[in-house]
Amino acid sequence: MTDSGTGGADDPFDGSDEITAGAATDETPESIAEDVRHEIQLGHVQDDVSSVLEERFEEAGIEARPEEVDDLAEEIEKDASS
Image (tube, rainbow, N blue to C red; front, side, top):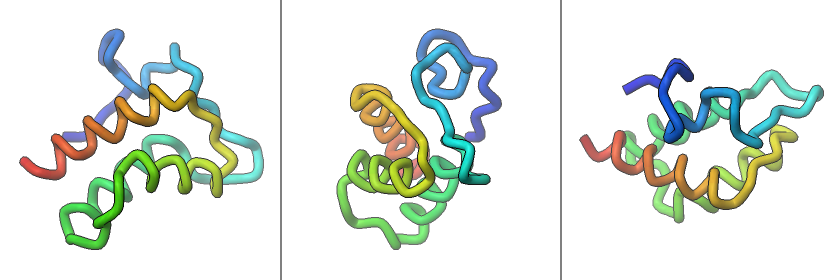
């Protein structure tokens, strides 16, 4: 499943949340989420998905509230397992 950001209150990419990208990166929350999802499917991510997302967001200069990261991690885990 790809997320176009047109969902409702549960859509992590709908623009109404606190996830914001810094100016020094081409990475977006969507691109990072898709990369992590793909890496899980390939078996390359064995760590806690929330921790992986937090680290990648930090590296990309993206700020997100912890509960948003947890919600996104849960969505990624669900998608990757299906």
